[in-house]
Length: 114
Length: 111
Image (cartoon, rainbow over all chains, first blue to last red; front, side, top):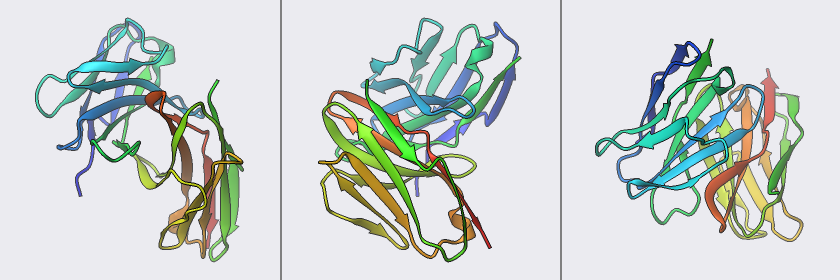
């Protein structure tokens, strides 16, 4: 069964450094998402992406964040200058047309900012 | 503000017990309610509910939605240790493409 994949599984970085989190959505899906989960807190929406552009973003998704679909398979989240409070699990999700709200999640990337 | 509340936060049971997990919501222009199981990695999809009173069932798991009282329950019968996980409830709205999540219920099943 097709799955969303994410790399790396764990990323450790110094404050102020740039990180790129990578996702490969399920191949026939057209809608892509990033969520994050700070330890002990709820899963929070960051951004949704459709037809090569951002369709919706949350207040968390400020100028430090960007997303890109550089080719036909990858979907990336870039954090330009990481802060301690960016430490979290980052989940990528995708869905296809006609399945309502059913989003399929990847295994996550644990980002630790020191 | 839209919100999704799950209860209990944590539940410890023995194998063979039946459990009921609750999810209540206040979301403008409700569209659907989804249940996910989160073990060590990805939240895995269990059910999507859009209509009141229609039970969705998969093996020992079942779920139902009440759109009048704004809640859903997830039942697990004859629990097994493999059911140990965090169960997440999420709500979709016609106003937005995102899912709004609750805090989750941590279920621990002991032999």
